[in-house]
Image 1: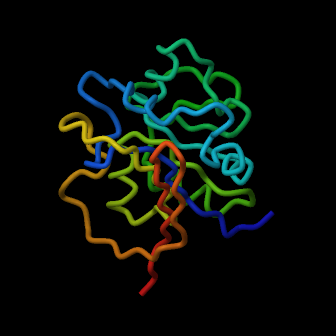
Image 2 (image 1 turned 90 degrees about the horizontal axis):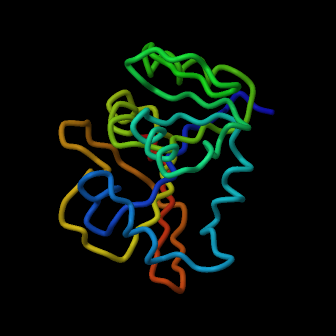
Length: 179
């Protein structure tokens, strides 16, 4: 265990930068589904023991009939409306930067940011994302929820790796370029 915990954004986006089509439609993700191919997700999840996710993203997963996939980790659902915790799933209403600072100061594995766009951009404004693993889906959706919103500081990144897959998905892994 180490106290050098990193916040890692692991997320999929269309080539034109959308993580969802209008009405939170994620259907375009299915074009890269392939039997036995999880694009490194299972291995990635083994490197984290805390998850930060926005309430809208959490509600979307639950509404699709799935159990919350990170209930085995310390999961923080970032929300403005208090709700009772469900096991290790905590509904967090306080300052996001304070939470990340607290988690980074504790021993543990890395911290997985699972979206959505509001959380990502809040973390970017406070320079709290250490690595970006972005799976680019080969489609231009034209409209929806942008992964990166305008009005955040410029951030230089350093390429760690690029992987391409049979179905056309390209996975980009960047880390902060600490100047």
